[in-house]
Image (cartoon, rainbow, N blue to C red; front, top):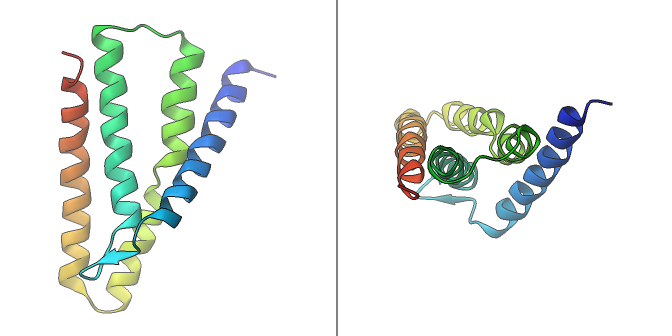
Amino acid sequence: MNLNYFWVFIGGGLGSVFRAILVKMLPQSILGLPLQIFFINVLGCFLMGTLFGLTLEKWNPNSLIRLFLTTGFLGGFTTFSAFSLDFGNLVQKKLYSLACIYVLGTVFLSLIFFLVGTRIFK
């Protein structure tokens, strides 16, 4: 078995477990906006940005560690499919304004937090 796939598998499983734990800990929504996946995706982008910045400036992990952390753990932790489901639920309830705020807020804050994460180790 290819070690790359093994470490992606292990990281993805751990990331998914951490996501499930956070979903149980976070309130489901605030002011009608789904909060759990929003927070997880923004946090995941922050962590990805932090890893990106760290590996550019101070740390050069081998390819297995990089795959474990990025494709594996953070790939399992964040979830575009759950984000899409939250969006679909808001649209189904005809909460179009909240759906737009959710999409724009998630994308904007995820990108901002990715950039913030890249700057931590500079």
